[in-house]
Image (cartoon, rainbow, N blue to C red; front, side, top):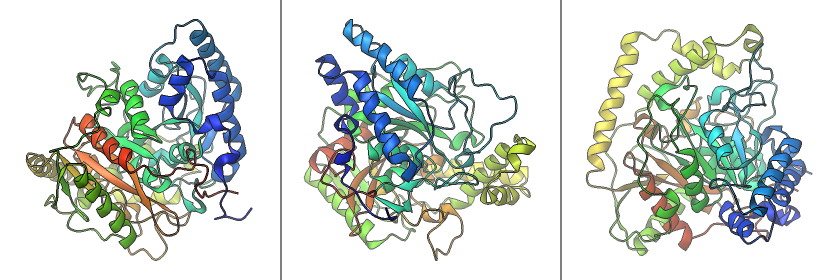
Length: 484
């Protein structure tokens, strides 16, 4: 089986292709059992994971036990929560009771305890989800591809020779192949949206602290947690679960009125004011990506939105992001044990080295730049409800590299100019598939809203998706894939 070859995904069990929304409907009708669904997802993992490396840990016995408990609840007519019996995958940066959390390292910290759940994991359990395993990440989620010393790169399901993106690359690859219908990721500079775009799935970075986090990320106020799925509706359903309050989140937001899953039921975008910026005024975009995103903007116009081509008017905030990101990396590495340091990714070590000369004044100036950017974007959104951009200016490139071959900038933020600005501003930003290159590599459309406007972002995304659904490996057996 050569890298880059493709398969017909109908080799995977049919139940592994079903959305969370449809699974819940079938459970209510008693047409299918959570145990059957869990087995289908576990079979898909067993069949494909050695080729893409989406998971760093699976526990079939525990997953099936959880599925049997859910089966009993549905049989008794007493399902718990919003996701009872739905399989989900968790990125391996979230503490998960009973399983190690390695954060991309091949060895755990000596004496580490695995007896507590992070807020997103606790929320999944409260709602009866069947957690099938933990997905791959680069060390601490530090870069926009998913690989590292001692672990194989996570490959793109559409083309195994290419990267799945990162740092939530394992979650994105797992979703694309039907290993689970739902997954949880993190996003400090694009880590949900970048692999979402590369793998052809949906991913939302909510407003900062909309999804509670604990322990706090070393990347501080850049770090967000959020839902990933194959459809916008499933993404909204998962956000309803993940956004529930947790007292461990120090920056907790007040609960929102209504459910996000209800927001996507209204597919209309009439009179929504949408600014379409093809390049933010400074980015270089591949022509195929640019054409697909422009067509998506036109599609929203056809749906009744008021779309105009407008740049938001801010300069590239890369200098401020680099300072804050490298400082976070240095904080993360400072806590490593000597055994873990022996396995440190050389790229991460170099990032930490670049942080060594930072002064307190430099950090404060970066925060001031961030505040100025936030003010500028806030003023922009006084006139525009939504900002549309490409998610990533290129399609997926060769696996095992931090940047594409021949790229002028040696560091990953150089090819992600559309994602990290909105970590600085803490706005909700979502990627939804909007087409393919001629080589059948997925392209993502980024939909950005003002702070706390997740419901509108989801509604616009669902309106586009409903009119222009894109084929996915899991849901469309006739679609070419990346495995054989």
